[in-house]
Image (cartoon, protein in one colour):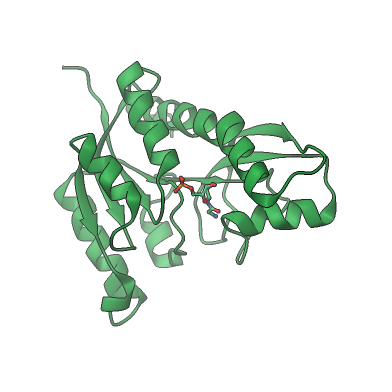
Length: 204
Ligand code: GAR
């Protein structure tokens, strides 16, 4: 069997980006990586159902049940070790990871963000809030970014970006859907493939 990087996808919500990764693995767009675990910080997140339907192992690490950030991250670390994870993909994961965690996984965590970084990013910019801010500013073009995760929220090296047009009369919901469809669901699987390939080739 081909050598593949075992990946864990961290989620918090609906999991459409997780679905794009699952579909990419089936279609062969994601060929050098294998999704072996899905971890949610939110019990009952629909992303977990998507993973179960695809036969992928699921885990819930509820931050509210942990005494602090380090206990939360230790639990995640344990799952990553058990599954020999080589790449962590944040796909709508709405919890900020500490510097301790990100340093431990340098160039081994990627994240998808629904804007063209450095616009509308950093602490407080997540989900619909990003699109609300883009519309409030009146930008005519927005998009999505996949980047490595470091200690600065949305501050790591950019891997891929894709621009998406804002339409007149857009609502945050309409814009979110267009950004997902035209950008996120494409560049997240493509970036995962690129980075898995680079890991296997010792290039990153
Ligand atoms: C996506 O738009 C993702 O880019 C965003 O949340 C949504 C999750 O949707 N992530 C962030 O804002 C992180 N800063 P999904 O659960 O359907 O993939």
